[in-house]
Amino acid sequence: MYDVIVVGGGHAGCEACLATAKMGLKTILITGNLNMVGSMPCNPSIGGPAKGVVVREIDALGGYMGKNADLCQIQTKLLNSSKGPAVWALRFQEDKLLYVKEMKRHLEETPNLDLLEGIVDDLLINGRSVEGVILENGQKIFGKKVILTTGTYLNSRILRGKVIKNEGPDSQRTSYGISKQLAELGFEIARLKTGTPARIYTNSIDFSVTKEEPGDAITRHFSFDPGYNSILNVNVPCYLTYTDKKLHNYILEHLTDSAMYGGVAEGIGPRYCPSIEDKIVKFKDKDRHQIFFEPESLELDETYIQGFSTSMSVEVQDKMIHMLKGLENCKVKRYAYAIEYDAINPLNIYPTLETKMISGLYTAGQINGTSGYEEAAGQGLIAGINAASSILGKKPLILKRDEAYIGVMIDDLVTKGTNEPYRLLTSRAEYRLLLRHDNADLRLREYGYYYGLIDEEQYARFTKKKADINKYYLKFKEDKIRFEYINDYFMTKNIASVKESLTIYTLLKRPDLNYTDILNICVKNNLYPELLELDKDVLEQIEISIKYEGYIAKTLALAEKMHIYENKIIPQNIDYDKVGNLALEAREKLKKIKPATIGQATRISGVNPADISVLIIYIEAYYGR
Image 1 (cartoon, helix red, strand yellow):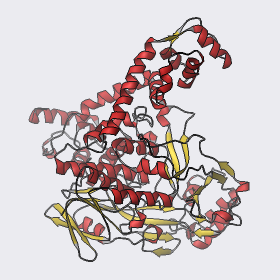
Image 2: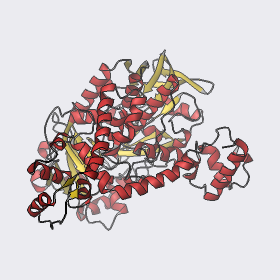
Image 3: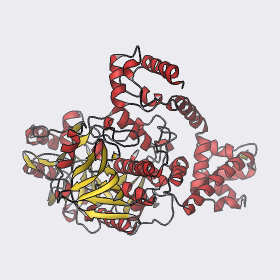
Image 4: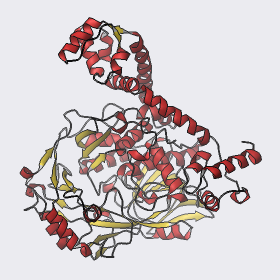
């Protein structure tokens, strides 16, 4: 008998089982191939806009994705560094073979965690509660909680033109029993689609006609904890090329050879990561589209063609590929494909990621309608924490929209649902100035400590960092630098002189100065030597707090107003049919989604302000809240 059974060894499954095991519960991870845990069947990278912040949040909470990404990276980049901190995000190219190897090693070394290679065919259900799983060989495994993280392996099929193969990514076996059983249990099953580009033999690419895209000279880290440095210690470039009109015309002429446009595909594809044929059809005004060549592993002579996913037939694909600049004489290792799979309607789950139909059953990752490794890992971590908390008697972790991108994602899913693979974007977060790459630990590490995922040593470093930030923020408001020292430095940067001594706080308010400038002034004039000993993350955090103080205060005020609604709990036994004057659509949506708070109810499409007012009055009258 296990406390927790995790089904599926992708990014969601890895985070889920590591969380429950770390919280002291006897856990088993069941997956079809233990040599593919945390695999990257699509792009060989971790992070990106919004997604990179999610990885930092996972690390702040005590998850493992960021640490594994640090160990296995072969190129690091801070995206949008020329813009404001609200849109900064890390993106790392990963050695995908090493990533799987290190993830498996970590899983094997984790106490309280068993690993089993097998295919789950059915769930053990007693009434409306889950009691375990049944493997395809008939073996029953019992558990108090089950977390489904089945990715794109539910009733999946690979599509290339008119050719269909019933299998999952990388020719792995698909599973049929679970989605059939979920439908019988009352879950709404959706058919979704995603895809992956071709892989090219690297030594057959002519990189001389492409633009080199190197990583940052500085090696960066997702993890807030020390000791996770790159194993390979390299900086491998990517390369940029473009499509052209000739290629576009060829694709348009052969659209019926696409599984999507030829009537073979049933699933709905991702809007924000379309196939190349979809881009050309929907953006006919564009003369070209960016295509990146990305290395997959130092052990592989294999390059990933980012931005060139397609469901075209192999014959058409081959000509398309050879029309790209740099690939005229290339050799194709593996052709692109689209993949269809089953997912559930995320309106069928609570914000804890426990399902509404079956008690003790949690879902995370692409089964919930999302796309992306990072979105999956974030959900897996939350599902693991909440499954374990339910057993241990701890309160569930439901992150607010102003606390984490993970909170935004889960709230979007369980409140609005999705009819296409959901992708996190910075534009989805109304409080994105608060949800920054740099402050994920300040936002979330206390939660990680409460749930037992952050140990005493990690917590001590965190509390020291917080103390240093508070101490030196106040010090910078008081301590002044003499104007002679300031002007001496300003001359070297062609900045107009000042006429009086200024506080460090005032200097950091200026857009043309940063904390490095302050350190340079101090070093030159033997001022504040203790600043040189401070962690640069502390100085960066203070600088951002000072520079964006007004904007942050306004955003906090808006979030605080929303907290009034978020703190108004809706009783779970409420009968919406008895709430008078609710619009018919609002009544139907509220009955289906069962929002936990008034705040969540305000975000339901079809529930208007008048409905919210009626609901608040009813709750206060009949429940005294």
